[in-house]
Image (cartoon, rainbow over all chains, first blue to last red):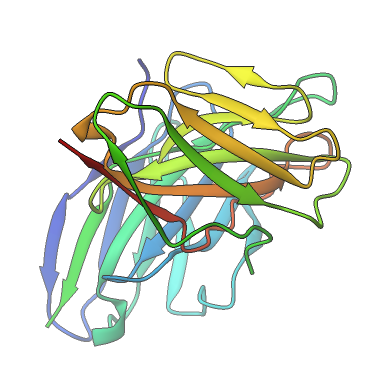
Length: 118
Length: 113
C-alpha cells in the first residue's frame, strides 16, 4: 500500500538552528500538508501546498516556516531559527486532486518526525 | 475549531463491538464525515468517511443519521490494537480545493482484555 514517508524520524537541534524536515508524499498525489502535534496536545494544521504554492496556512505558520517541493518527489518543511516551543511531532500528509464527480478525497499521513529543540 | 463533539473517553471489552458516537449538528450539505485514529503519537490513520449513506470497509462501519447531525463509528470486533484516540472530522470533500482536516480532541478508546 502506498504511504507517505518522512525523515528524519527524530531530530534534536539547538535553539536558533535551522531544521529541514523531509517528506515523500504518495506518488500520484498533488496536495501536500504539514501538521504538528505538541506533546499531549491536538494535531494542528500548519500549511497546505498545491501546484508549487501555498494554498492555505494557519496562524502558526509564520515567517520562520517555509515549505518547498524541490523536485518531483520531495516536500520539505524548513524552520529557519528554531525555538523551544517548536518542539513537536511534525506530520506530513498528502491527498489526490479530485474532480467534482468524485466523492471525498482522503488525506494520508506519514509517521511523523519528532523535533526536539534544546 | 473542530465542528464535532465526541466523548472524551470510552472503554470496550476485547472482541466486542466498539461504538464511537460523534455529533456534528452544524454540518453543511457538502461536508463529509471523516474518521481517523492515532495510536500513541503515530501518524493519524484514515479509517472511513461518508456523506449521507452508511459506509463499510475492512476496518469499520460508519452509520450517519438521516438528518446528518450525528454519526457512529463501529469497530465490529475490537482488539487490543484498536486502543487509540479516534477523531471525527467534518470537511468539504469535493469541489473547491482540498480543505485541510481540523482535529479536535477525539475519543480515547481503551480496549480491555
